Image 1: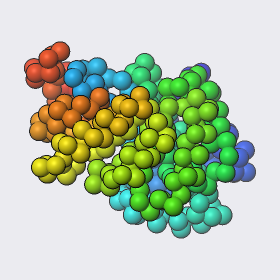
Image 2: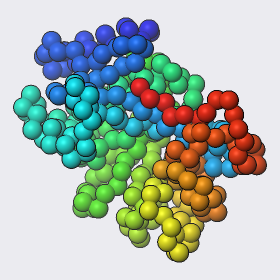
Image 3: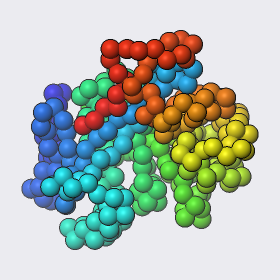
Length: 291
């Protein structure tokens, strides 16, 4: 189905579901944007690469770019406040679910436009979305994916694990299992400093397809051993480990020494690599894709 028709389809669907004439999806210059109250949603895709051969891209992580209609960019806490105080939604939880669905639909449509054959699409799901949906997680978005002509096996559902949700881990794992039963791949995303025995236990319990941690803040003497332990546990459950936010050579070297399977970050945007991992110049920089 042409992109214009898909955008119209999802606008019509939104109208039926919310009994509204508002059309939140906008197509302009072959880019799809979403409107949610005063927020405008855009997509940014960052390639996820093989560590030993970064020219090989296995998928893209979708990152949200949000601004007001006047293009004033918002901080994360400002987004939270807008979601919690959106008077057009009956509850803040429903706002979060709707915002999450709207964002992922925008990412899917943009992904189809310019990256249709570039592997998997990694989409973050708000933990509150999973907790707010009582059963059949992934069914709604599965219908979106099917309408776009894709299969759920190419979608990786990414859950950022935060300590404030520790008492809800059982529910979150059950929700992720529901996604898995729908055919999605599953990823757990940890802040590096939040990693502890609970992290390793979660990985062992869920056996996710992917586990990612951020390279931000690395540099302590025990980092290498800790990361070795993490990648070993991930490999033991047949998953793949990802080091994200790699922005300099020393963290790229750490990814290799700690045996991370995959990497993502700005370090790889302006250089290409030969098969041995040595930098070489190229006429086509490996840029992140903005929408």
